[in-house]
Image (cartoon, rainbow, N blue to C red; front, side, top):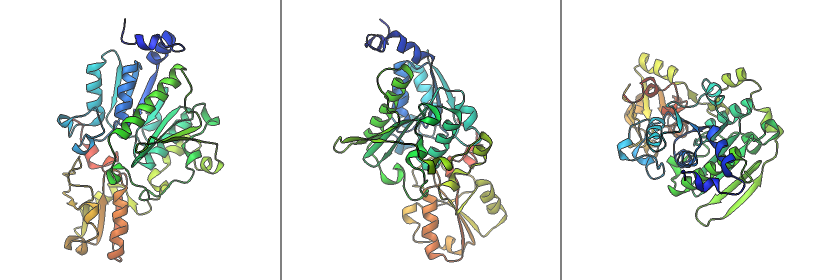
Length: 367
C-alpha cells in the first residue's frame, strides 16, 4: 500500500483521480489562517506542484490559527517557513516558494504558471486583484473569506467568463476602512481551519473530477451554531464593467484606489517627503506586538485604539503619514485625526507593510 491507498479505493476517484492531482499545479496566495490548512491537505492528498506566495512574516498573534507555524518561526517569511516544513513531510512534492506579496506587476506572470489558484488573503483590494488576474488568464479561483464567526467559500471562474467571479457577487468594492480584517475583529483559530480545509476539498474535487464542486455558488458557514446555507451567484453586468479588459489595463490598475483609498499615498512619495521635510511625521498604527517592525525612519508607534488622543508630536507636524499591516487601519486613523486636526495634510500609506514597495520588502528575506 502507498499513502494514497485510501483515496484509490474510493469509487469514482481511483488511481485516475490521483494521477490528476499529481499532474496539477496549484498556487496558494496567502499562507495564513486559510492558506495553512489548505496547504496541509493539498500536500497530504498528493497535489504534485504547490506554489506558496506570501510576503508577510510570522508573528506571535498568528499562531492561534496559522497551524503550520510555531514560536520558532516568528519573524520568518511565511512562504519560506511553510515551504520548508511541508518539504520535510512530503519530499516528493514540488513546493515553489514565492516570498513576496501579489501585485499588479507580478500577478500575471506568477498565476499563468498554475492550473488553479486558492485565495487565502484577508483584504478587499487583494481579492479584487487576484480575481481579475484569474479572469484574464482563464484560471479557476477557489475563494474564501472569514468575518468574526462566519466563513464563506466558492469556486469562481470555473469555466472561464461564462462562470461567476468575485465581481459578480460584489460589484461595488467597499471602502478599505469600511470592513475590517481579523486583526481588528478577532477570530477563533478553528474557523479559518474549517474554511481553509473546505478550500482544499473544493480544489481536490475540481482537479480530480470527483463529486460536485461549488460552481457559481457561495457556501456560508457559522461556527457558533454550525448553520450553513448556499447563495447562487449569477453574472452581474455592473461588476464586469469594472474589470480590466486586458493585461496592460490590469497592470495600470490601482486596486487600493478602487476600494476607496482617496487619502492614500505611495511609500516612495511618503519617504521622499519624510526625508526632505523636518515637519513631517511617520506613524505606525499597528499593535505593538505585530511584526515585522519598521526600523528604518523610526516611526512613532501609536496603535489605532490610541490615535484619537493626538500627542504633541502629531499636533506640531505639518504632514502626517500613517501605516499599518495592509493599509486598512491607517485609513481609519486618517479619518480620526482629521476630525481633530483641521487643515493638516494626513495620509495613509497604500498597502502598509505588506506593500511590495514598503521598506521592509526592500530587504532580502531571511536576513
